[in-house]
Image (tube, rainbow, N blue to C red):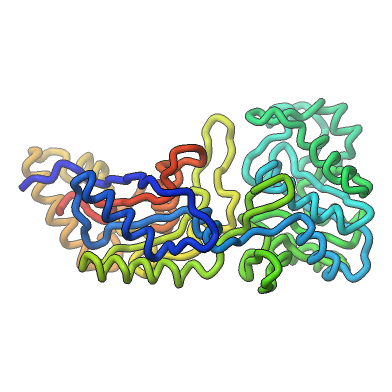
Length: 399
């Protein structure tokens, strides 16, 4: 029978999860209920993708700005000022962290990158640099020079002036605040030798550069709230990275122990259906908004845990390239036959048959691709679908 449908991604409606809920029992039952209601069958190599949020919520993995302050006080060992390099511009991602950090010291020096932060939130439009004598790779701007050159910085989507917003947070907890603008993290060392590298994906490089350039105290956000405790949430691997604002004083941390949970869910699905379903946890998708220029990935990784069948990158052929080049003079039926045979031959090898035939296929991790798909399906608002069920992702034209 001819198959007319390829990949399908279904958002699965779920209850509002709370601390203590058993995802291993609840998630498989939700999938089975959805399958019965919508009339689809469970198949081998289907994928269950769960948002990191529901895992963290059921773990109760939360912490307060007070917890952040107390943890940092221990690490600072009496130091009274701190420099923060290259934080992103985000109420959701950084405001509560800044509140806790600032409460631990008497002075905070914040170094913001320009014209945009690491994930693309802009302080000003790129073209405003044209015609200035400013070297964005080397120069340091204070607030007065920044204001003179670029004016007030209002975020395109939130309407927030993050320079004033971050200053207010620091000053409201009683600390002095100084803000500078520079893209080289080492510039902070002209102001303080005590630094928290607040960047996400370049953090290891920043920490190494700061240490090599004379920093006396340097850690990353990954090093705060990273110690197991029964008093509040923590994440041994990522610390504060991947956290989200929960209340005006609390953050939900990135989930921990995810591998155990997804392995158990995969096992439960096999016990219930006899099918080997893949399972993963996903956070932000790895894609970029073409209008706002914002790169979505503010989490440290797209997927912190996944079953073994999701490891690696796709092994695919570029059908339109083959059809337009090697088989362009053949009929549709002849093209279909030869391409089908070629795909079947590819399936017996570890890699695509040749570089030209696979040229233009996406060389990204399968979990990054599936996580991006799932993030778009589930959204971050009121859809109520924190679980995405994906079918046919591993199918190809020959199936």
